[in-house]
Length: 97
Image (cartoon, rainbow, N blue to C red; front, top):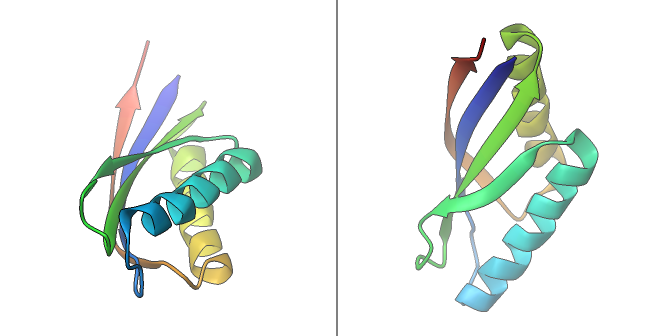
């Protein structure tokens, strides 16, 4: 079993409250979960209105498949969520067994 763990740093331009930020992230996280069958959660910048970091976990049988799925997630966010900007991302491949 392979787990690809990633962090995606986001800029949230125009966000003027934590309530607005939570609404954007809740919608984004739910959609990523439904569309890609991955786990996602806010993992940093909790009190910053205009920034967020998402933690993503992808379970796969190969590292290549997990990394490809992460690339799909990044492209989907860029195409479908003009309200957020990807600033950076990191990934780690964890092998079990």
